[in-house]
Image (tube, rainbow over the protein chains, first blue to last red):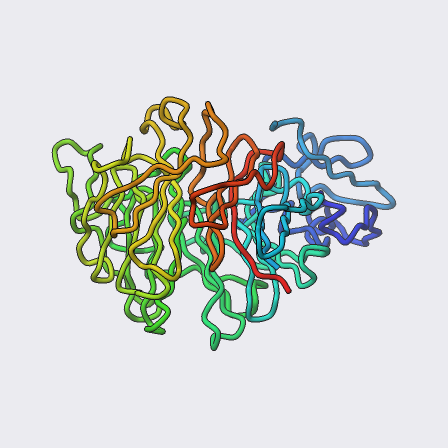
Length: 77
Length: 355
């Protein structure tokens, strides 16, 4: 769904200091974040394979060429 | 060309037919992954708008300018922090009047109304309703506290109505700047100590008759009602042919203000066709009497029709079921054809006229 909402684009190259800055620059930012700017509960974010909730969440610092993946949680019907 | 926009739990389907409305072609789904609570054509510029919801990505609105092939999503939609509310669902869309370029109205949960003046790109909460003084007496129904009906008076550019479950009907005489309660005579039997409160009614669907705009109809949790004075007073209508006053959809005949159609369900605790006898009930005398119509409808059938899942146009009456069938009648409800079957659960049906 996110790729469809981004015009079919699945990968973006972004320069930013934090995970939150990267995600807020995406054309799907208002799907990833709610109206209070909080990451939606069922959206999982991984930096090089590690859940950012195990780091500093949206404040997780980026240093170089990390790969960030957005994955919808397993839920629903 | 008669067209139906059919919102489902798994995207939007477009059904198209000819003027006889007997054979229907069903499109592949668009807006895949989204629950389409309502999709509506905008005849001003041939756009389509959809109230779309995702359990992962939240509530939004999509717009298509090429009849559903490609879509853009609202850029800004949410409730201001000072309201203390957050947007739960988008429910219902209403394009503005012909002269109101770019204006749309959007109803959502929890009991909120938005206005856009840029063709759905950005939306502003209507504070006069969001902060209405009666809000502490509103309660959510089973589907949440949804603002599901938005009706514009075709004659008076300042008069409009919204309906919220379970808050009731509200009328504005100043284009949405202020709202009056419009629930006099409408029961709320679930308040046994005060079954006719000023506010808190569980209206399920509200319609203004397009040719006689002082006449309003509503299907309520507690009966079917008609008002002939812009909603100031309501008359309860069932008991003379209807098996139940409970139901969700209501349909009208745009050429006859005395005709309406409802699809009763057994009751609040069992929301399904009474006794498996699916029928559309029609009145031609303003609700004084009702007749059951079932020509072409399956029997037995235990179906449920949601509040947005019916529509009408100059030549047809339509409804869709949670079991994924769409039924269409081109003869005022006397006979029906199954226009589509095996769709995902249907959330909404809206007629369009695409040439």
